[in-house]
Image (cartoon, rainbow, N blue to C red):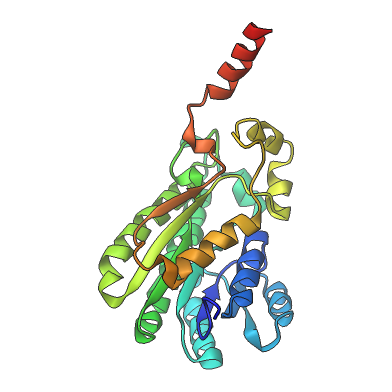
Length: 267
């Protein structure tokens, strides 16, 4: 028996690299999935590959009315909701390029980033929780980021928004645990997707040097963890933030330089 037989999942950002991997994993394990994305045609294309196991919807998670409508449509299509995967994030390049530091970031960039990445997750949880509770309980998996736990050279709004997601995760786990709804967050490190490769480019080579395993993550790595946290196998895991970064955050910033230095001394 598959872990998600008879279960229904609602996935945001479903047309992106991580979203598509999550959807594939959940469907392969028996779930029916609502595929949502701000790019509606792309969401419907992803869903179309799975026949009656998926339905695609256009969704801007920053629009609360649209969130409610998409969740209502999911209930109409599949009759229930068991798992919410909050994966969508702001990907507008102009806004991302303006996400700098506390001194220079434009107010509109700060506000838009927090609205989509944090308030959008709140909207999805707000309208999904009653349905998950009605199904007897289930799981919420929020995609946070290592940037919500550690500082970076830029993207202060992104980091703040992901820190907010981490805090919301703990609050929702506390406030809705009695309804048998678990809420956990995943904090990925560098994951290679078509979008991240476009944004990071050669920066990935710099980042990879600081990975103990010497390689970057893939969407399938995230999907495997989402599936575990969304399933009953993780029934006693609640309110946690699980870092999945290949060990990048396990060491001091200077470790790789010190290892290079030590190797040079031996030579």
